[in-house]
Image (cartoon, rainbow, N blue to C red; front, side):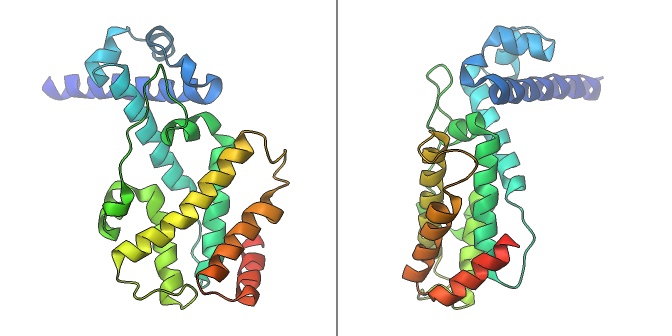
Length: 226
């Protein structure tokens, strides 16, 4: 009987989380209200407090679910060219943000639900192993940047220096996030018209600044686009 009760509780919790993600994606953060959520999940408003401890806990779990899906969205096929893979991961990152703008904004704190922001933490203090465990969506960038260093495409003292690898990966993350946020706000037009002249060019310039050659970067970009 205990197992059955546990299964029922888990099912209700999962239904509520699924309903919350759907409401967010379709209507934005203002739709994350206890009554709407209960109606969508077919349960009572008290279930928000029973299973999540309130709206703050629910919103944290919605963000976690978004990050799990973000992790899956950035899982692209690995090739022999780590720089091409870096471009591919950047494209997958942008695609997720464009397709899931409300979730993307909530995950990274640029919007809130009823004044409640998703929790955040300082990734620059973490080792590569800790990022793999706790921030798998960022780990995609960390992993491919380390491969770029090992391949000699990015100049660094050592691919085993976690702080250097993470800080370099954070540069790519920062520029990608900045581009995406401006695109979502409408500053770069529609239909991805700014991807080649702004996003790809910016990534290419950063790679060259970090030690790669313009010719190699251009070849890798061409390969990633195929």
